[in-house]
Image (tube, rainbow, N blue to C red; front, side, top):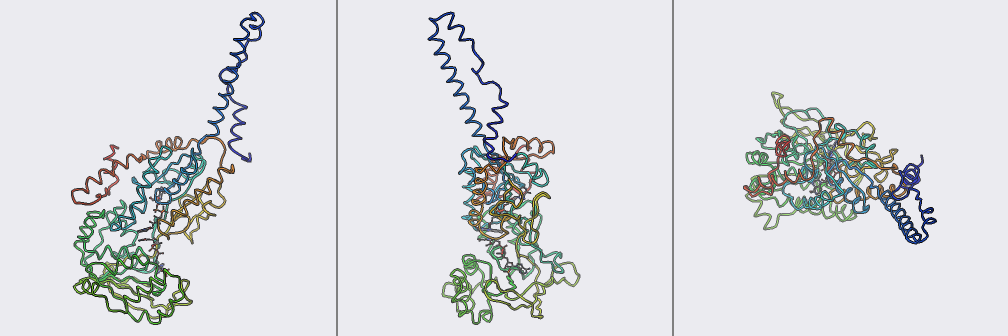
Length: 523
Ligand SMILES: Cc1cc2nc3c(=O)[nH]c(=O)nc-3n(C[C@H](O)[C@H](O)[C@H](O)COP(=O)(O)OP(=O)(O)OC[C@H]3O[C@@H](n4cnc5c(N)ncnc54)[C@H](O)[C@@H]3O)c2cc1C
Ligand SMILES: NC(=O)c1ccc[n+]([C@@H]2O[C@H](COP(=O)([O-])OP(=O)(O)OC[C@H]3O[C@@H](n4cnc5c(N)ncnc54)[C@H](OP(=O)(O)O)[C@@H]3O)[C@@H](O)[C@H]2O)c1
């Protein structure tokens, strides 16, 4: 049936199949009136009241039917999931939203990505918590969509499904030696210091002198900063105690951050660069030759890029001011930017058992500005190092064979959040637009997805009739031995983390072991 408007469809179907309404059975009142005319007035009054009751009953039922709450499910509890839910709850007074999450704990990269020394960024958790506490929202943690429950099962149970499951993989370098011990993805390294359960055993060996980070984005700077920050400065953050222990033993003195293009194409932003320049106990190493002629070329670039490049230029070519010079003079650690170098091979140690360096192809630029491409010149350079961290971007995975996926772009094909060719299926966040953009960007695009969904609901484009929502999924999960956790379960774990952190003056000591977490919840 073409769902002109599912509410109307539901109402007319109900009218045909409804049980009799209370007070609507035919009365024998007429004959009573004839037998006892004195009683006629009372009986007429009664009948009018009965008819009014019938009308009110109908109206009440109609209202209930019209208010049949749309059951919506969101997959992923990172910023995209929470901001989509927030928009839906705010702009539809009856909508019910279930947020499914594979981890036992919510908040995605806000918990497992954002650097521990950036606590202010994590304040968004307060807003997400308000959303999760809404009576019309429920957090369903410990459920891996695509494994524990399939997307078609969710689509059958809900009026609409929003996929907001982020980008959980890292982009591979696809160069020889990438698999050697001593080579890690930045994704895993970040997961390790932030307490992501799957990375808790990473234990990177930091006994080497030099580390190389491949890629020049903000994640690369996060990783460089955590490697070089004096550990006592991290002690009051929510970095895991295990990571702090390893960082305290670190012998890494120099960190190279390597880009295949030039200073005008770096992907990091000015605030994060400034933090590096001001990092206690470190000094920057920039080669002035990389910046020759740049002063003239930045005149016409957009303002944020211009200011960023000017800061790079000043740092590379000018003597540091008194304050910076005083900080840098005793520095025992250094970080540097290497430009026009593309990773070609991870070089093994003589016994072949671990990484001992990286071979870089020297590049030059073809084209200008942001769009310039790095092409190899044919020359190479070997850079000795004991640790290689590949920070060339994250990548989304396909979630379910029924969901279209563009493997090249690593996104779900969509039009403003509507999944192409699959009515009732939506996406938001990194899986919608690719693994770039800060939390604010993710918020904007998630609100847009929410808006599209509500437009479709209003236009009658979503399935008609009631949907069982979580009731149906709960039965499926239970039959499969899956034990979902609720938001109040998270609040118990949260309280435990906060209490464990208190002794050390940390905001929290993160729980790392899912079994222990389930134990704490009495499962
Ligand atoms: C290392 C790092 C640091 C960052 N720092 C900052 C910063 O300081 N400031 C800033 O503004 N932005 C920062 N960002 C960017 C910001 O984190 C992203 O914009 C944002 O997290 C993207 O949101 P998302 O919801 O799409 O993805 P995510 O945050 O990754 O959320 C996706 C969620 O889906 C869940 N999930 C995945 N698969 C499944 C499944 N099959 N079933 C159920 N659930 C699933 C995941 O567990 C996760 O909770 C950082 C990013 C990274 C990588
Ligand atoms: N503090 C913060 O606000 C913060 C912190 C962390 C992350 N984030 C955000 O999260 C998003 C993801 O960050 P990200 O650093 O993972 O990604 P990114 O910003 O896309 O940077 C990726 C870097 O890897 C390089 N690269 C990609 N493929 C490569 C290859 N094959 N060989 C060599 N280099 C390659 C890119 O160079 P090319 O440009 O040449 O491709 C770029 O320098 C960004 O939007 C970022 O701003 C924000």
